[in-house]
Image (cartoon, rainbow, N blue to C red; front, side, top):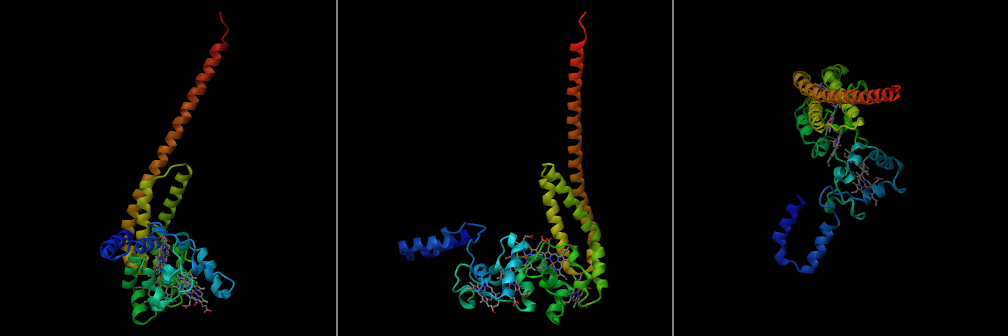
Length: 284
Ligand code: HEC
Ligand code: HEC
Ligand code: HEC
Ligand code: HEC
Ligand code: HEC
């Protein structure tokens, strides 16, 4: 993307630029940054919001965010709120730096959905999304995930406390039951992969298949369509079964290799004993 911008800039701008100015602009614009996966070392939003001058309730936001899965993945304040983390004086300028501020309730899905595109699509089509748009009564992303301390998602988000605010817990429970078996398999495979890693084996192919399958399944919840989830459970169980077979296959290989090396050890030490006995047999 940046190289596209760069080439457009080159094509559009070259003739008119006095060369010294161009170099400075170029250096300022591009050279201090890495070309991809930009990481901002100094972040005015965090510096100021974590400082003593901020009121304590606001300072807590930074602490919460630091513990989040987003923070670990370099998603910071301006990725959601807009603004410019490199310029303390204009950081929160709506006009000049695209600061969004706090999004209104019904706009939150669009904010999160800029990155979580597939989920936004399911959500918008769901009973929840429709209710949010028509009557403002549906829950948005933050109601279930929180905003600053967002962690990796799992089925435990479905709880009586969270899901009985607006309707009976029954519906939520049906959904949780429909998801239970697939979720259980997901956990088992996760454990299997961890065990293989501990043994120094990285089953890359299976890991990739696993991660995309579980991510796909976990977006499905957002339809809040119990029948649809039930319908597709079979398909996901089959996919996960295949992956599980691959993993148990690797385990079996590992075990037979261990057995084989055990057999070799026995053979070698057995031969040692025979040699020892032979050397000790009295000469005639
Ligand atoms: C994943 C997106 C996301 C990230 C990252 C994020 N925020 Fe927010 N923030 C939100 C949303 C959504 C709201 C409104 C809902 C709420 O208050 O929980 C919000 C609300 C706020 C508020 C208003 C709270 C209030 O009570 O009025 C402040 C201040 C704030 N964020 C600051 C920050 C700072 C500072 C950071 C970085 C350390 C940050 N946010 C990172 C999404 C985010
Ligand atoms: C120099 C200090 C400073 C910097 C830099 C700064 N903020 Fe703020 N921010 C504040 C103060 C002060 C408030 C208002 C707190 C209050 O209402 O008491 C605030 C409020 C907010 C709010 C909630 C209320 C609103 O006005 O919408 C958000 C969201 C927010 N800041 C995000 C950011 C982001 C994102 C950045 C970086 C791009 C940033 N801030 C940079 C000091 C700063
Ligand atoms: C600028 C892009 C961006 C925005 C905006 C954003 N996220 Fe994320 N989110 C990410 C990335 C990157 C990850 C880490 C990779 C992953 O786990 O999928 C992530 C991870 C997550 C996870 C954990 C996923 C898992 O693996 O279990 C949840 C839940 C989540 N985000 C919810 C939200 C919510 C809710 C909002 C809005 C308040 C939001 N995100 C806004 C980029 C974003
Ligand atoms: C009614 C509660 C609820 C709402 C509203 C909701 N989610 Fe979720 N979300 C969940 C649950 C529950 C899971 C875990 C599903 C599972 O374990 O199979 C989840 C999973 C996720 C994941 C992880 C998917 C993965 O790859 O592992 C992300 C990211 C996410 N949600 C983002 C969002 C975004 C963005 C929105 C708003 C558009 C949103 N959620 C709205 C409850 C909700
Ligand atoms: C902010 C309010 C609110 C919260 C919180 C909430 N819901 Fe809902 N839910 C609604 C509304 C509104 C509807 C759709 C209108 C209706 O059918 O009553 C709905 C509908 C549903 C449906 C039926 C969808 C359909 O198409 O038939 C399911 C299933 C459901 N919710 C599950 C959950 C789960 C699971 C949670 C907790 C993770 C949850 N809800 C939390 C408001 C909420």
